[in-house]
Image (cartoon, rainbow, N blue to C red; front, side, top):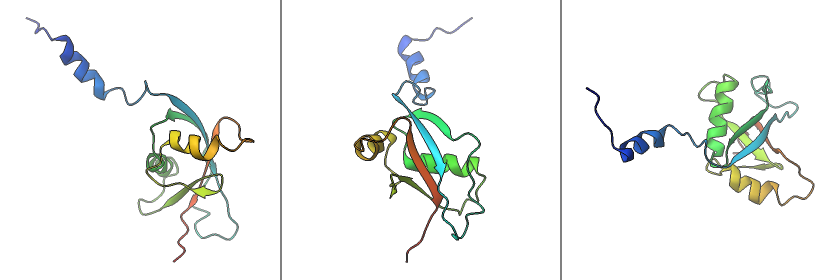
Length: 123
């Protein structure tokens, strides 16, 4: 005999499986920023597919994890993610970067371009 489920129970189960697919989406180009003579430049390569589409709620920290997985970087390896030459904080969302760093520069076009490079320690 089948157990009947209430409608609100079904909705609770579906809530976790959405993975932000219903959120507004943004297209991003992830470019490898190469600096001559920099240590670690042979480890960080360009992606085979550098265009992605993701939720506007995705953070820079998530983009860094994605890059680390795709580039098969050691877990101790740190990356910087930049927009228009400015290093982005790990908690910045793609929507925040688009509104405050990308859209306000009139010459920029779609998709938003984020660059990544090995982390540079200045101290």
